[in-house]
Length: 85
Image 1 (tube, rainbow, N blue to C red):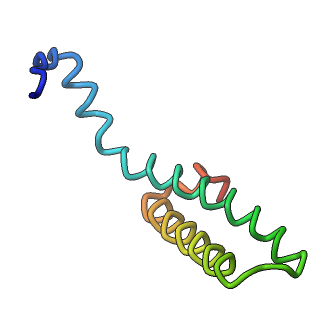
Image 2 (image 1 turned 180 degrees about the vertical axis):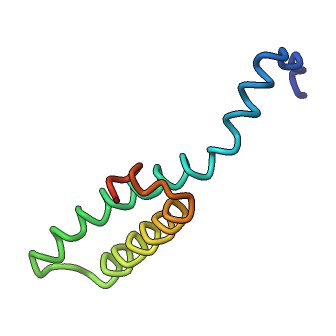
């Protein structure tokens, strides 16, 4: 059973319409930052010389996520959002 919701007020609908186009950028920043933390943690494991194959795959996947997010932000001219030029 779903709970009915009230329609958005015109002011809220306008705010949502202004916000939605920015969602891909917000998502790209969140994905980049999350993957960067994970990659940094795994880089420490790699430096110790005790990295497993699974961890190596995870590091490569994190780097792929970072590259994809960076591409989205570069295309939008928004690398500044992740500290890039």
